[in-house]
Image: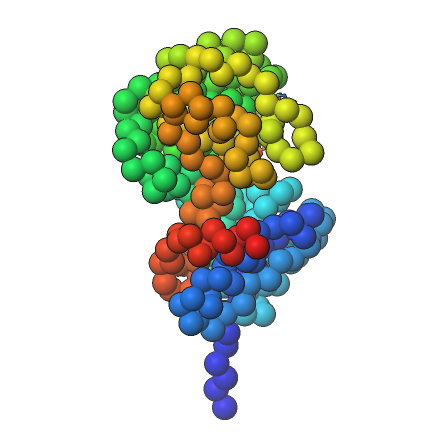
Length: 277
Ligand code: ATR
């Protein structure tokens, strides 16, 4: 007797309770009328390898990977995409029918797709981009901005050596600026991105002086809790085109859902509402 196997996907992290990914994928499964499940999985680092190798045997077609496993999973994959290698982390695993584990990183894709959808006139080639922060999220942003044709990236981080290390890795189109000078680099930029956790609910305040922002500059914040950060509100008041960070989360899920469930889903206002519910 043959049995219909329902494809299962999920997200692996620790902690995992606050992940919005289940809401996104479940919304799409419902909207597109697909049989499938999406499950949050709390997994500790010591158990990661064992769990990942067991999942395909129980009907999993893939998983999203979040903190603290995004780097460690690279070593567990049989195949790592160029963009995941460049970013140095993976957020998506695909369990292929031939048994191979494929690791990808769709964060940079999500970042760019969000800007293109929310700021359709955005031209990456129009001028330098200014990036605040040099952590894991910054790597995806920098890799994708360079790929999109940004002529130069001005990069400032509180801990300067981390910015210097990114310059050494990503090359001469990066120019490192001291954190205390971060406000000055905004004058030159036509794209500005906050990749730090500053401005997040319950965290430290965003204090970079913003009087250098020019009208028309496309400004985006990876922080999406709150959705309208102090940084975005000030940028809007300065006449900038602002894009909130929730969209990056929504768009990064698109290629994964397509690979797992066979339909390329759309990022709609209904999806945003589902993510925020
Ligand atoms: P993520 O993966 O979200 O990028 P991360 O790798 O921990 O997380 O990076 C957090 C970023 O926010 C870093 O750039 C960090 O600066 P440092 O490298 O100096 O730590 C930045 N950040 C966090 N708290 C900050 C603060 N109070 N002031 C300035 N930058 C801060």
